[in-house]
Image 1 (cartoon, rainbow, N blue to C red):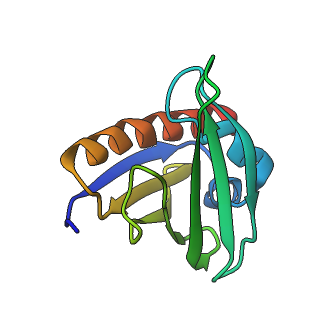
Image 2: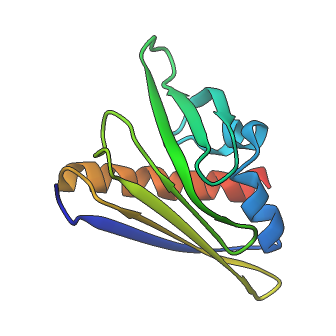
Image 3: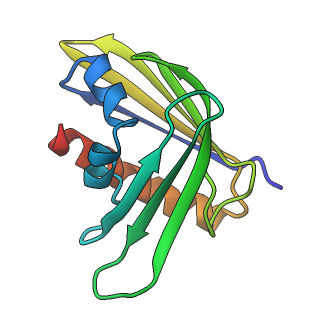
Length: 141
């Protein structure tokens, strides 16, 4: 177990409620949870309550292999904070993501913090993926 973490901040020109709700809407999740160009999300499902679970399956283009990501919602405070576990073949069982949203300049200041990675390589790969996901979130909204 390591203490490796990453933190990314971004301003989105949308109200916090709209940004927050996208993270809990499976149809929206399929549109923006793509960590690399050309990838898709053929499956996204969730039970958006504390203790509820979600599942997101990421698919690379021209490959049969897919990458399931699953987790449990630990905290849901609409338009303010969303915290959940994030488990895949590239993370630890106790890996956790926290999204913090604050109204700012006619939009939302979003901070994503992801903690507990098995290696620096995993952290660095996730940092790239999360950056692309946040870019896609903005263009999707």
